[in-house]
Length: 185
Image (cartoon, rainbow, N blue to C red):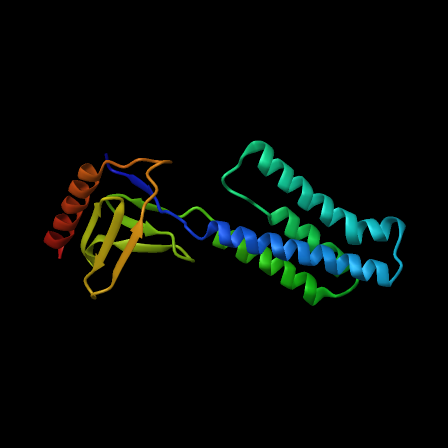
């Protein structure tokens, strides 16, 4: 096998999703307050209050009904920006959209790709690691260790439930790649 796909455990996703929900609820409360202060009714009140609230409730229902592991609030964050933009508070709308983008980055699936050419590490932005930059890489007991020649080390737990990797095969593959890169230098 020449290509390996290793999924890293992301232990903070539930915290980020909680923060996302709190941000959504805060925005719904703020837009409701503005709608009540301005005594907005009809279409404008619907845009301010009910559209973001309905989107959040729909997302919540869908994720409970489907049981989705990945919670994606991108659409809700875009809907939350609409009332702020319609009020010509563009900077608040931009902050809401920025929070949606940052939330999406924080909860993304972390996948390492290893092939004969390089290793792609899921930092932001993705980092391409050449084999000649490494002194060692090993997978043992669900812990991936990447040891660089410049004395930097990365250790991450992997998630074997989604995409299992044979430790011995992976370690043999990495050993061959490291030897090949050492002989090419």
